[in-house]
Length: 490
Image (cartoon, rainbow, N blue to C red; front, side, top):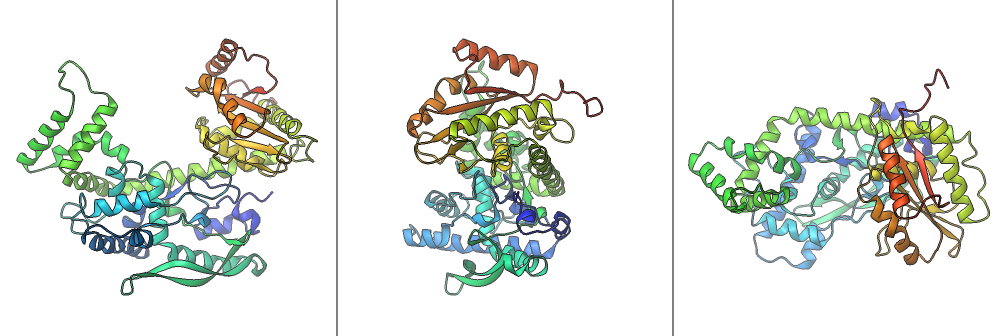
């Protein structure tokens, strides 16, 4: 099965490891992101220069933003970017098609550069300037947007990095020449240039490799969650007593006036953002703290990459290896419903009675209890198991995990859920039925996986409460690791 870059391009994983590149999946994006801070904090001159390149482009945008209301054409040319989907990183599952940086991001960046961040590039408190400032203020701008923006601005480096590897290690039959748009920005003509590269070819498109040392998981080092959580320490870092008093007093004024009532988490976050709007220099004090602990950022990101390689690659490879011995990848049944039922039953048996449950645990035996990860695991492992299996596109009612389709009128929906999901009862009552209506099918399976005895009891209790016990299309899978025989006893 060709799941990973090394599989498809016939490269030994150790070759990629030595080169320093992450072994991406060519079935689905993996939830990893480029963190610009890792460029900034790197000891490598080449990476520092890439960060400077990002900042210089932002300075250019800031210069343009100060001229007043910017034209829509300029926003689309200078601020709006497509996702660099060829690196196979990000949120998209069941492929690599993301939304990219649209007009909302472009407008937000333009507005903030000449309002809140009007001194961008002229910071006195921090060691440098940081793109991540935008995500600290603007709602809806997270790690994916920051990563997409950074990836676009260092795309030439990633293209060179991949081309060098392709020429040295990949067969010519698996590469091709590609003329890539928007590779380098010309500050004199204020336009993006194009360039030709020899790159790995996959389904008529090129593939990009990314150095592991630039990647992280979960969030960038400079992020909104840490800003809120650590906000109390920021005013204390201000040497100016008058400013410190003003900040604390303003924050207090934004919180509830009821002395006996503790503000909710949402109220506190709202008060903090109002204070940041009033005193934007506080962001620089927060970033200064992050800069001073930059070595920790590298250490944490490295740990996250090691974790990602274990759960998204090693665990999946071992899972697939075991499934190959079960008939899971054999010829499909006659109908989508029969095929989906057959595959789910094989999965259940393999997870419960063999070593399949190990897919859901890290090296320390901690369960990977994230529903998006659960769905990703099955997409990676099942991608070649069923004819025409795809993640269901969002049709306005929300995405189903998978569909098994033997033609437009022979389609079965499959949804994987965690028993620990707080919304499990509501989901079981309504969700798939809505999707069935939207997708014009009355065939669906709900697969519920539990990892503890309490989760098992909870799932069974919910099914009983809503009258769905013993339904053939609702299947419970035991993913516990505390009730399985050890390898020496099995």
